[in-house]
Length: 263
Image 1 (cartoon, helix red, strand yellow):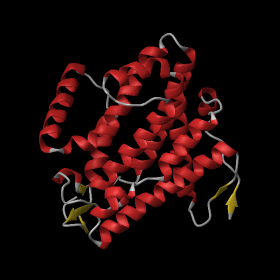
Image 2 (cartoon, rainbow, N blue to C red; image 1 turned 180 degrees about the horizontal axis):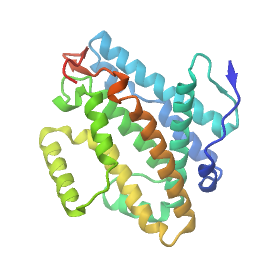
Image 3 (cartoon, one colour; image 1 turned 180 degrees about the vertical axis):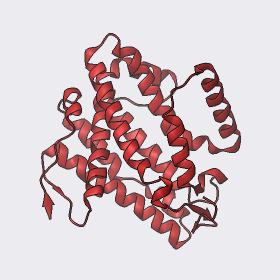
Image 4 (cartoon, helix red, strand yellow; image 1 turned 90 degrees about the horizontal axis):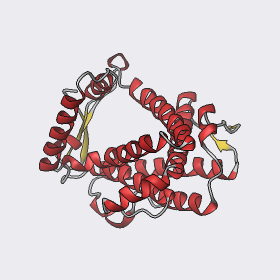
């Protein structure tokens, strides 16, 4: 069954103008090659690792197809998906479109800090592509023997508890900052820093755009749209981890994906 194309959320429309063809092709090309075959596939020794690679590849290609349909004003084919799955993929598509819009509108403020940090991105589309690549890299590495222990285990209960804690107002910002720095130092020492890279890149974008939004209406609108969609996607994702849902955790041991006995 082919469903009619769902319009992006209303808040997205205010911050999103037409993407130029060169940028859309850059984004689509980056998704076409994820996960990269170069060393990712070579590291897959077991059936579970190969399945993990295939799952990530399928996810990247579905997102690529949805974005391509959006850019070219084509209908989406939702055959075989439930309504909740359709809703999830719509939100993922809108999230990335909104993030691109934010980066593009804030590019004048974003470009210099990223260049100063040695992050080689030349256009808004190349920065979005970099975020794609890091997210896939982190998701793939969890199945490898070289991954730090914390990256090889996933506990739905722990994830849900951390999500609920993140919703509480921050009373002591200095203490929260010290805690964040302490977590980063520990992660760097244990090799877990890899899992933080996508979040660090995104936070750098958001912090820069928050400053730019004070004087730029377009950035302000895009920032509002992105935060709304990001929160919607986050809440939808973590809802499945509620203890009442009975979600099972997992752990990777020698390339085999096993149930997490104590989640």
